[in-house]
Amino acid sequence: MAAHHTMDTFSDPSFRDLMAQRPFLRLWAARLAGTSANQMLMVALGWQMYDLTGSAWDLGLIGLYQFIPALALTLWAGHVVDRHHRGRIVAFCLATQCVAALVLMAASRGQWTSRELLLGMSLVFGSVRVFQMAAQQALTPSLVPLNLLQRALAFSSAGAQVAIIGGPAVGGLVFVFGADKVYGLGAALLAISSALIVRLRYTHVPPPREPASLRTLLAGVAFIWRHKVILGAISLDLFAVLLGGAVALLPMFARDILHVGPQGLGLLRSAPAVGAVLVSVTLSRWPLRHHVGRTLLIAVAAFGICMVVFGLSTSFALSLLVLAISGGADMISVVVRQTLAQLETPNHMRGRVGAVNGVFIGASNQLGEFESGATAALLGPVGSVVAGGIGTIVVALSWRYLFPALATRDRLEVPAREP
Image (cartoon, rainbow, N blue to C red):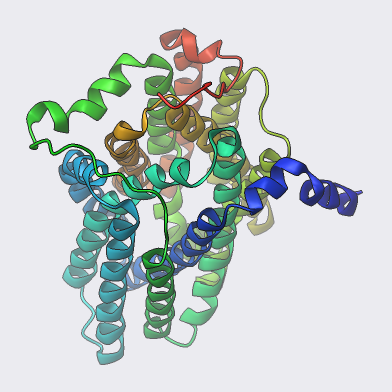
């Protein structure tokens, strides 16, 4: 039966149309390599930091140091992305991360890694990723017809989740031979990704020259504020993952609670992506047709329940299972949020809206890591994750009343023409 469904997927005309979009496939491959590298680097950074300091607070600081520059630069990043060639921006950001990975490789090999160096490189990663994320999100609608956009976003997410599965697992295995090997492999993948993007071709029409002003910089914020469905979707993701994320504490769970070492840490980081890739492949074949708002809220509540169970679990197998389910629930949120934002945003605004969306994502991940580390310092890792999961469930219930237009949204409509 599974084989039959796979054959149906690849024989579907819409899927074949998507596979004919060569520039999109080049971006997809580059994202696969870049995301794999990023996940490897985060495994090595987290494990090295915990080895050096043994501090939950310092684990949280890795996320905070990536979030601060993203928050500071997000408005400028959106303006730059809407004014310049988006492919070149992504390529430059990947190349910069490659250089940072090489610095970490040299430090690990020469045994001069320090807490300050790890936090400094976290600042570098956060600074360039805000530009990369805004440009990358804005690129996809330029590479595929809008009627294929939901499928393209789901397929892109599937590729990213494959990388999130493989990256941490490979990073954990390679870490056995030394952190420098992880950083070296990550640098090689980032170089490949940058080279793929440099060769990306798409129609780029430079917009009319417009000086940067407070009005142009804040245009993305104003647009999202006026569109309550988009505001509700991205703020839901922000608060849910801010409260419910447990990624920063996985080194503590791996070493002190589940006793599985760096290899187990790699599997724990990969587990959410297992569920996510299954859901994203399913959505590539069968896009959401009805009740998308209600489905989104249910998925976020399910994510919170999974975090509560994970926090209480002392079984490695159960922990992997609930993390996988949480990844599948989160993927529904990702596809709905991204599709709504892309379909309802005009092309000349996509960079600025994407930058604001990116800082929401960054807040939910990196700031969420800091929140987890800070609360773990007070409540312990179990108390932190359980309290965060309960908070996520409360958020999902609250958003049903705070954003009724989102809760009652039935379809992800494709506009008849580009705005």
